[in-house]
Amino acid sequence: MVIRRNGAGLAVLAASSMALGAAFLTAAGASASTTSAATRLICPQASTAAGSGGSSPSILPGPAVDGLNGVTTISAKLAWAVGTSGDSPAIDQFNGSKWSSVDGRALDVIGQFNAAAKFPGGAWAVGADGPSDTVTRPFIVRLTGTKSGTKVQSTPTPKLGKGQLLTASATSAKNAWAGGFVGKFASVLLHWNGKSWTRSPFPGKGGITSVLAISAKNVWALSGTLHGNSSSQVWHWSGKAWRQSTIPARNGKLGYTLDGLSATSAKDVWAVGFTNTDGNLQTFTVSVHWNGSKWTMVDNPSLPITDGDAFAGVGAAAPNDAWAVGDNVHFPAVIEHWNGTSWKAVTSPSCGALSAISLAPGGKAWAVGTIPDAQDTTPFILQFTGKAWKKVPAPTN
Image 1 (cartoon, rainbow, N blue to C red):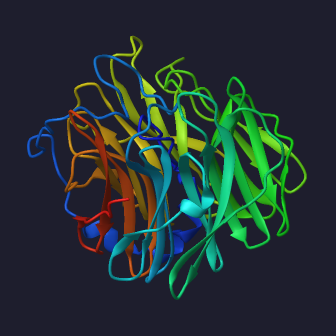
Image 2 (image 1 turned 90 degrees about the vertical axis):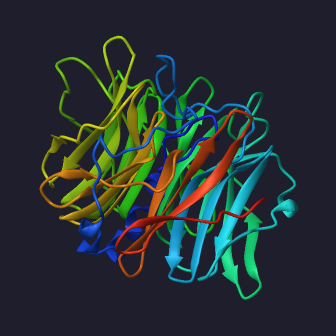
């Protein structure tokens, strides 16, 4: 991922970045309680993710706010969530019992983190250095867990123009990818070889919204526009070259934006996002599945909507067990579970926009996002306990 990114920063969902932790989640998730339009409560505030008043979703940055955009799980006793706190990047660490704010002042930057991706012993956090309403530059830090907490190290990147990194994914300490945009939303893709980050050629158009590395020779990337009615491009790396993959049409010529990727194997890959109605009055969740030979559109349940709902991130554990999260304007955050046959809406314990999900050992999971209100925004964290989702205290950065 992420990620759908919004005024709280650019998330991912990458998602994106959390996909390879998927093997931990079991079919226990299928027992989560489902919900219907009749039982959902209307939230008093309007979400920033899917827009309101007929505006379409956007993952472009907005003013400095407080929110979490990415999360990744290392073990049952170590996870990180990243985002924005005022005008500074935010890092939170889970130590097995609670979430605490990490002191990142040594970075001496302003800006935001948009995504996090684990590797053995640590994680990458990617984003942008600089005020979101002026000039920003792609930015990467390395996070490692220590007995005293988290060690945060800035990592040099190639010289790049104005832009941001939106997504990251790693298969090992010597193989990682980070993607985003520079200039007027031109794609930028970086590769880590264990010693340094270098820019990698990428043929896609538009910014890279999500990247997923399954292995060194099996990588997926999403790129394109961000408006929900112009289809994303889906690209696959074979270890030698990038090739564009055909995705199915939706509602005739109506396109869609994909923001999050996850996989359990080379033959079980999910991509999620959103689409707009012809008049851009509403948004709807979109999910497509790769079975090893082609992408197929998969229906999602109807949700109570005012201006729309959208997926921002996905985490898959098995062919019959996956989660997708996002935002539903004026309603509790979107959480859906795939049981091998269909997506089912699941009760969310909080209003707000979920930006990313990361699967954890023991059939558990973390999801993070932003709650908007009349004056400001606040970060929030949800935990799947194996039976239901619950809201847990988020630290004050």
